[in-house]
Length: 389
Image 1 (spheres, rainbow, N blue to C red):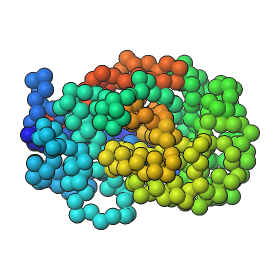
Image 2 (cartoon, rainbow, N blue to C red):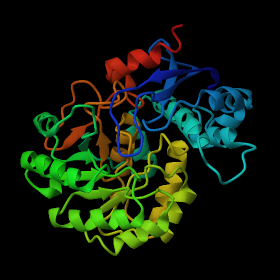
Image 3 (cartoon, rainbow, N blue to C red):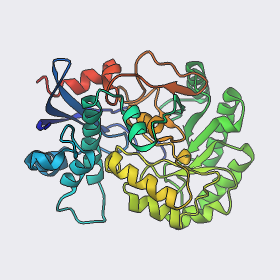
Image 4 (cartoon, rainbow, N blue to C red):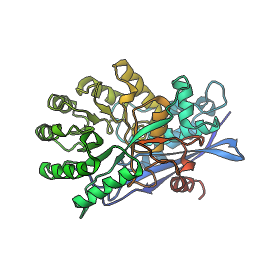
């Protein structure tokens, strides 16, 4: 019977001078964890790793005071699957959430998401499978996508960054093999239209450009932008208003006929369900961006996918936020519509395995067991340092 023998946690800086229309990233941090088991593979203990996506700060207090102790103090027999040969992520999740009231999900969803990622990494390593293969075998009848659509997220506001610099950034993404890019909007409509025109002069057409307001707008401003953006036929118009203002999202849908996207700041299945019920989202064109690393992990994401199916949504309408390997594995294993990518920022957490190029806007997955952190040298160096101290 496998046991968790230690859990290490730390803080990794991902600060930079970039900003979106709502926050800057000058002091941004991420939590990192290493879950050490007593299972030996290739002569070494199996260790699962996890971290949280950008945009939410490190959760060391919650990890240290609440969630790590719960996992370590749980009866080891309560954390394994029916065979007794592997950890059960669902049972581990139940131990983490023990004695927690429903609602008010807040930052605890981030802390649990970090540990959930590490547990799934360990589970797949114990089975000697890439996580995407394990997920396909367990939940999709063995069918996995051989490659996953990815888009390049960037176009942040940056001190001294003029239109030529913005164009050069986007040209660089195309040169890397991306077919769709994303940029930030929300400071000023006239300025943003000039920035959009500049990017379109590089990428060529609206369906190759997504824009993201990061929840900045009230309804009149969101509508004003919608009217100005509509002629471009963009890939999507993202998170115009506050993520919990479902009425705003529903009203905006009446003024914008093209695809919209939101969901990266919804941190539970219940919040996602409220978006589907009340947010006016359209299953034939809109995109959902729930990020497992911020929303209680893959165990909760599976519940969200079940909810979406019940409400007539395809998993193909999900393109998670975060730009990390965990969501890439989920996309391939569970048949999502794609994954975000950060080729230029939030390193070493952004991007995918070393030596796997983006080709025609798609990327393949490594054969490494687990999430594949070991196949991304710079990231593995940060994560493995947790238990090398």
